[in-house]
Image (tube, rainbow, N blue to C red):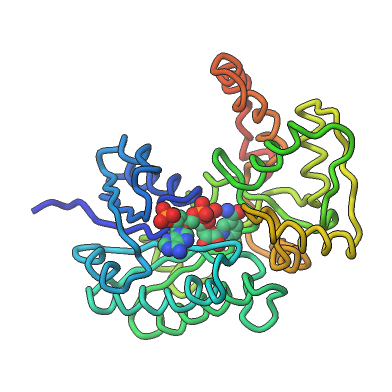
Length: 321
Ligand SMILES: NC(=O)c1ccc[n+]([C@@H]2O[C@H](COP(=O)([O-])OP(=O)(O)OC[C@H]3O[C@@H](n4cnc5c(N)ncnc54)[C@H](OP(=O)(O)O)[C@@H]3O)[C@@H](O)[C@H]2O)c1
């Protein structure tokens, strides 16, 4: 009989999920990733231990059949804004109930979940944060009934294919003059996706992580404006940040949330009213300051990317000890 263990990654086709999938597959796990659009995620199939399938995990019967023969589940399904009314509730709360039910029906005992820093059912400053908090609470409540649950609350996550640094860098490339920035003073401790993935993977078999909620932060605190200034400075862009006050930040959100693509919504604005910082716990090592200088090369040609990789200096763990 094979010793290979099976893991189902819900939301495994997303930015964090893909990195997690490769990390687990490299460690010998047989990884299943359901996606509504598997054709967009074919890059996952380069790994022989990864199985990509077409499924809508929000359909309880499809979810149930995906759970057959799985040893563990990691849930990363999440959204930053609603396309339809009550999407936050459907995806961050109701879906959690289906996942727990599917675990119970299939005899799966291990469940890991990615929440968000600042998620709090009662005091979250936005619907996003309150719904993430409610889902996480539900999970830990069910966890007391025999399911071994661990959840992670990361600050903003950066890395190749992220939708934060890359998005700003992509927009700033075309900016000449001033870039009007909403919520410029909002604080965060960006965490590198590889560091977060490492923590998730190492907790799967760690019994001391059962029933725990881990906050996950990078080594440095930035305001949103400082992150943009860092991008501008390192890319030598002909542009400056124009910090907007509260009223204009709200106005920007009101306008942008009604445009296609919903670049920024009122709910995002409310999320940014809560600083995304860790109060305690050990911080991850990789700094955004090291990562951002490579962006131009990543957007550029392969020769310059190779040059960046060659010159990249890995942080010495001793330095931050
Ligand atoms: N990225 C960050 O900075 C950050 C920070 C804190 C917390 N988090 C949390 O970490 C998790 C993963 O984040 P991410 O940045 O990797 O997200 P992402 O790239 O946007 O990926 C989201 C994943 O969720 C799935 N999904 C979204 N809406 C769905 C729906 N209606 N039905 C079924 N599947 C749906 C997508 O699958 P399809 O292939 O089917 O589209 C995709 O795999 C989220 O829960 C997020 O709240 C992220």
